[in-house]
Amino acid sequence: MTKGPGYRFMVYMSKQMIACDEASFLISYREDHRLGLRKWWNLKMHLLSCHLCRKYARQIGELNSSLEVYREHCSHESCEHHLSPEAGSRITKLVKRDLNAK
Image (cartoon, rainbow, N blue to C red; front, side, top):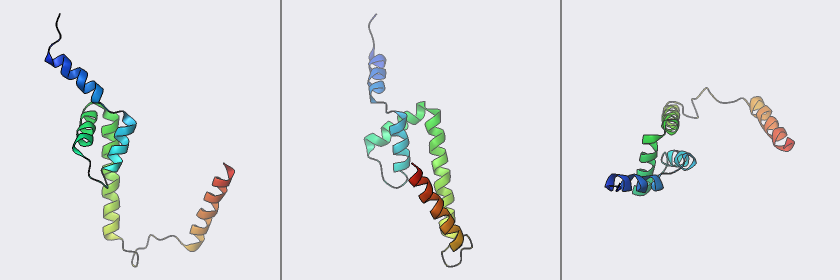
């Protein structure tokens, strides 16, 4: 049985598919940078076939939207969400302790 052009196309596409770790990097990267055509296409093709990466892309988009709303509505002068100096120093001590424990 001969293998037609559809088979050759599928073999070609399977060789072009990127792994989930590269897809997750590109999903994060595209929030701040423009992807080239090939990387954009590879990511689109991966997202068509991987529901976990689609979910990750949705979550990253929601996170960035939330951060954008926060940036727009919370200026540093009027924002009430700042840490107290005591809370900042407690966090700093805990982080340094955890870093030194490793």
